[in-house]
Amino acid sequence: MSEDKTNATWPLPKFYFEVKLESGIEAKFQEVAGLDLASEGGLQSVNVSLKKGIFTKTDNYFKWYDSIKMNAMNKCTVLIRLLDESGKPAMSWKLHNAWPTRILSPDFKEEGDEVAIELLEMAYEGMETDGSGAN
Image 1 (cartoon, helix red, strand yellow):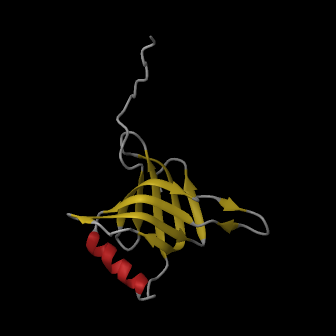
Image 2 (image 1 turned 30 degrees about the horizontal axis):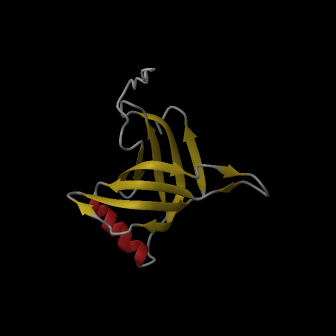
């Protein structure tokens, strides 16, 4: 009988991605997809999908959400950081002139000072990457 020799050198963090919007909104997400660029017929961005997230500053979040519902929200800069096992940024992406295109939350469950959502999808007009995460 073979023994499982798998040895994790660090506990897996619950959230790998830290997200900050210039409007003071902060969140952590488990998954990020769409940080790609397509060059067919000119450089085009793909919408970014942020999945399984927790927003921490709920007052700012709800003001932002209300502005989206009223169609009065401004485009903003969004900083996405991939965190390493110690919680330090390993890589970062800065989205310029970003705006939400879809928010999915089955119940907008609020617990304490946090709001959980299933999906936040954002479009953007430009992106910078930083392999050091220092952005």
